[in-house]
Length: 181
Image (cartoon, rainbow, N blue to C red; front, side, top):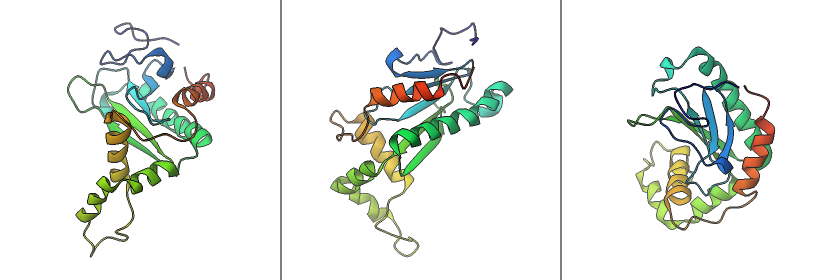
């Protein structure tokens, strides 16, 4: 697999290089790693190795790999974690950060932890009861906020259930290696 000569091996366009134990896969155009500051097993980052925040400015080869990379990551995460939901969001609008995607598995235990935390019940007061389908339900925005605040920013994240981060990383390396160059 070749790599662009202007950045170190294993680095994104913004110079970010994940710790080796969290790196899952790298291609000429993309890096997949477990999110460095996340205690949620399976929270992945797919980062561009091209210096742009504009998806339309990515090389054609990078765009051709994007869909299969996301689909393969989703498939492998579904196999090991069996999440109820899997969120994929595009980010990288901040200066100095390469275009990247967050891949966030929401397992039943994450949802239960969110619903059991009384601090997040305030979010239900922001719903218009006239137009809301179910004012007791939660949505992707609320669960993403919960994951970011509790599993990425909190010094004491909720306990995780299921495979460890290391187990998930090793499983994903095995499943994704050889599929991309």
